[in-house]
Structures are given as structure tokens and as C-alpha cells.
Amino acid sequence: MNWLELGGTAVALAMDAFAVAMCRGLEMKKLNVKHLLLIALMFGLFQALMPLIGWVVSVQFKKYIEPVDHWIAFALLVFIGVKMIAEAFKGDEDKKDSLNFKMLLLMSLATSIDALVVGITFVATETNVWIGCSVIGAVTFAISAFGVFLGNKVGNRCSSKAEIFGGAVLILIGLKILLEHLGMIAF
Image 1 (tube, one colour):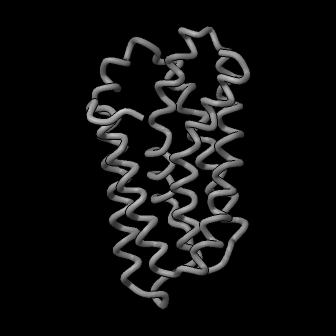
Image 2: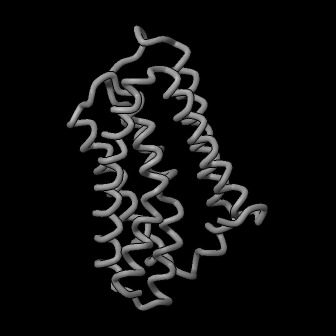
Image 3: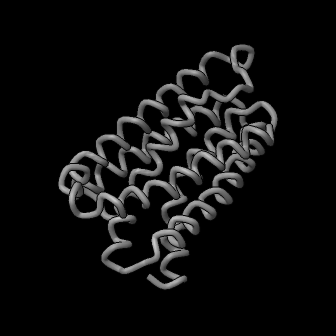
């Protein structure tokens, strides 16, 4: 894999993390830089670790992971999306500017499952796994940080409607992943 292909792969992998990070930014009453950095770090870390795991397990476990990876991502994203929509109806007085670490772990995992397969391709393309994982992690960190920032700016203008939209986007991303793997749509 050359630098252009690796950069394109990193950006493509970061798009789900960007959308989820933006949704988290939508939920924030005010921009919390510490939370922005933690979200970006978690997404970047998971996106960097998953190709490494994929590279390690390579072809040996592909037949076990591939049949269910889309179902796992779908379930996690729908769960998070429905929870986000439900919280939108609670009203601003019930919202907190805290960061739920368990939810962040689930979001990080859900958005990085597709990166596992990229690690498997590192073997076939003879890509240096350390460089590949580092580029993917760094790009995801930067794009996720921007997503939180952008989501916060949009969310402050749109209030709970933005949260409902964000939750719907997560559900649609999960549905897209599922339908792609079932061969019903191609992107």
C-alpha cells in the first residue's frame, strides 16, 4: 500500500468516527476541550489498534469475525443512536456535560470494527503494520477532534433537534454497515 492509498484508507476509516464524534459534540452544552481530546484519543486509539489486531489474527480468524462484524457494529450503533434520541426528549435540564466512559468505549469499538479487516489486508499488501496503524490512528484523532468541535457549534444552534438528528445518523450508519455486508447496497 503506498502513501496515497494509506492516507485514503485512513480517511475512509475515520468517517464513521467523525460522524459519531460530531454527534457527541451535538450533545455538549459547551465545548469541553478535555472531552474533545478524550473522544478523539479513544477513536484514534481504537482505529489504530484494530488493524494491528487484524494483522495479528490475519487469515486464521477471518472466517469467524467476518460473518458477524457487521451485526456487532449495527447493534452498537443502533443502541447508541436510540439512547441519544431518547435523551433528546429529556430536555436540557436533565442533560449533563459529562462523558460516559462506557458509552465512549462502545462508540470507539463500533466505529473501528471495519479497521480490523484493513489489518488483514496489510498482510496481503505487505504494508508496514506500524506505519499503517500510526497513520490511521493519527488521521482518526484529527478528524474526530474536528467532528466534536463542529458538532458542538451546530448543536448549540439547534438544541435537541440536533441530538435527534445525530441519533438518527448513528442508526443509519449502523443500517448502512449491515446492508453493505448483506450485499443489499454498495458504497
